[in-house]
Amino acid sequence: MPTPTSPAVRLSDVRLEYSGRTILRGLDLAVPRGSMTAVLGPSGSGKSTLLAAITGELVPAQGTVEVFGQPVPRGARALLEMRKRLGVLLQGNGLLTDLTVAENVALPLRAHLRLAEPELRARVAAKLDAVGLGAAADLFPRELSGGMARRAALARAIALDPPLLLCDEPLTGLDPIASGVVMALLRQLNQSLGLTCIVVSHHVRETLPVCDQAVVVANGTLVFEGAPDVLQASQDPLLRQFLDGAAHGPIAFDDVTGQRAA
Ligand SMILES: Nc1ncnc2c1ncn2[C@@H]1O[C@H](COP(=O)(O)OP(=O)(O)OP(=O)(O)O)[C@@H](O)[C@H]1O
Image 1 (cartoon, helix red, strand yellow):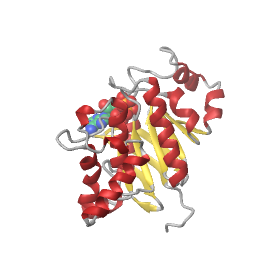
Image 2: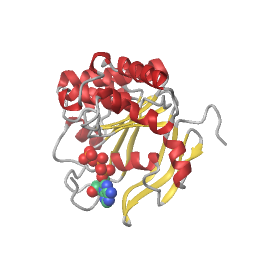
Image 3: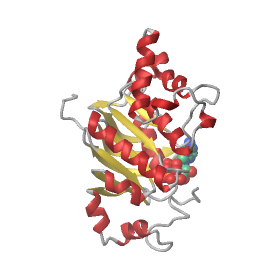
Image 4: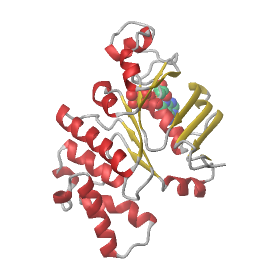
C-alpha cells in the first residue's frame, strides 16, 4: 500500500536483463522523497538500464520496482498515467528543432492537459523563468548554447510539475561553467519544489557535492549506497578506482558485464 512515507523509488531484489543477458542483479535501493540521488558508475555499467526500470521501459526479470509506493505498471494506459508524474531529462535533450523553446516546453502541457491558451503560456513562462530562460522563449534550439539547450529540456521535463525527475547524464557535452549552472539549478529545483531527483552521471566531482545520496553501479550490481562524503572518503579499492579514474583495479572498464561495453 502506498503511504505518505513510502520512498519516491524503491527497488527490491531487482534483476535487469536485455535479451536474456543480465545487466544488473541484486538491486535493493530506496530513494527518499525530496532527496537528490546521484547514480554513478563507469560507462556501460548499467546506469541508464536502471533508469529504464524506473520509467517502466524495461520490465525486471526479477524483483519489484515501486514509484511512490506503487509498483511500476505494465499496461500502456497505466504506464502513461504514471509517466505524467515522472519528468525525464534525456542525454540528447530531445528538443524539436523546428519549434521555439516555448513551444517545446508547451508540448507536454498540450499532450496531457486541456489548458486555455493564456494559462498554457503563463505556465510555460513560469517554467522558463525557473530555469533562467525567460528571455529565450522565442528562440529556436539551434540558437541556444549547450547549457541553454539543456536548461530548455529541463523546463520541458518539469512542465507538468512532476514530483520525480530522472536525469540521464545532464552534464554531457557541457563545459565546467555550464555544468555548474545545470547542477546548481537541479539542486535549487529539488530544494524549492521538493522535487525528488535521480541524476545519472559519471561526472563525480560536479555531481556528488549537490546530492544527498550516492549510488555506485559497477560489476553488474550496486556497490555503494550512502552519503556522498562517505563515498568520497571510502578506501574500498573498487570505489577508489572509480573515484580516482584509475584504469586498473577491481572494475573491468572494458568488460563490465562479460561483453565489451560502450
Ligand atoms: N536496449 C538495449 N538492448 C540490449 N542491450 C542494451 C540495451 N541498452 C543497454 N544495453 C547494454 O546494457 C549495458 C549497460 O548499458 P547502459 O546504457 O545502461 O550503461 P550506462 O552505465 O548508462 O553507460 P553510459 O555511461 O555509457 O551511458 C551495456 O552493455 C549495453 O550494451
